[in-house]
Length: 151
Image 1 (spheres, rainbow, N blue to C red):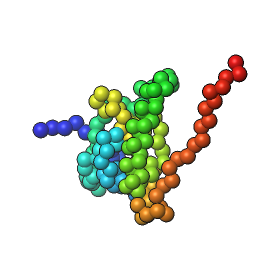
Image 2: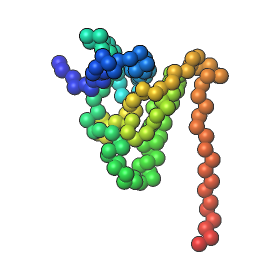
Image 3: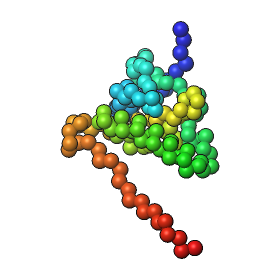
Image 4: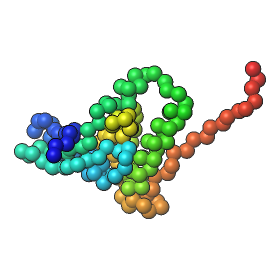
């Protein structure tokens, strides 16, 4: 049985400097620890002829950025999308991983336009995941809605 996957690999030994390799491995290890329906799944992490690679879930719909193409969506649809992505990010935070670069270009669309977070290349791993002092604080915002209209 064959499965279509995406493969990320460094294509040149010159590009495979220590810092780049460390980031590459960190992304693979971080994502491999996460199991959530809205996070791109890593199937294999390895090395071929001295070059590291990882295979991951293929998302045929491309990025959310390309799908949106700068066109706004309805508030209800946007709210559902944000809720879905927030739940996926909570899973990462619960595992001690902070993405640090969540944007529409880093959300891929699987079959049925299911959004999946990808590109954990800038992810930061918390030292002691789960301890009160190391858990990320939830984002905070104050939104004031006025029901009184002066117009």
